[in-house]
Image 1 (cartoon, rainbow, N blue to C red):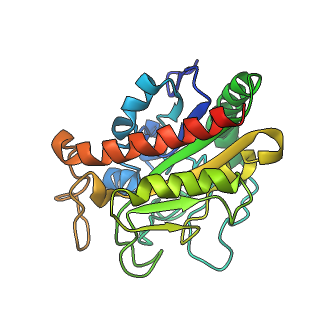
Image 2 (cartoon, helix red, strand yellow; image 1 turned 90 degrees about the horizontal axis):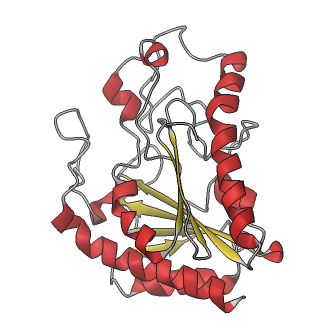
Length: 272
């Protein structure tokens, strides 16, 4: 196993993908970037730590340590936009969510380099996900839960403040409706805002693997990160971002997410 790719195998019918928690950037690539801070700005900060309790639930976790600024393993490898007509970032992003350039002029990756990055990081990450799904699918239906977070306010990507829980199943395509309803109900207990198939309907991972007719039910959770860390209300800078992980602040969210993951496992087991 590559040192940047972490796989924890569990026995429960639940695989959790962690595609955006990495902050590793090869030195040769970082040297071409405008700022080390900008290059890591849009990470899903601390999400791997937020969900570490899932190991004790028997979940399988697949995580890449490589920054999404190097390659985004949750984008269509063909380069096709997941949200046509809306602002988004690509397979090898050249700008931040706020539109700031990631590379110095003329230093952006070309097609050959993008293909090399895909072979080096994208393909092994998805091979690991597929392997774990296949392993668990041999016993019956399995849930793939793609775990994400984002700042609550990113005007270039969406208007206003994002709901706390953003559940995506690509408009009911990637999993059974009963799973989506169970996850929604588990989130609703928190009393926090939630939406199903709002701004975030599920990235490439959810859409690629979600085949409920074959027993693989994929769902994405995009958290507004105010639910577990201090989320600046205005523009972020190296002085205030990323916020530190505070266990006491995060604990209520961990309890909510434990309920969500329990709903996922219960659903899969009910199908066996």
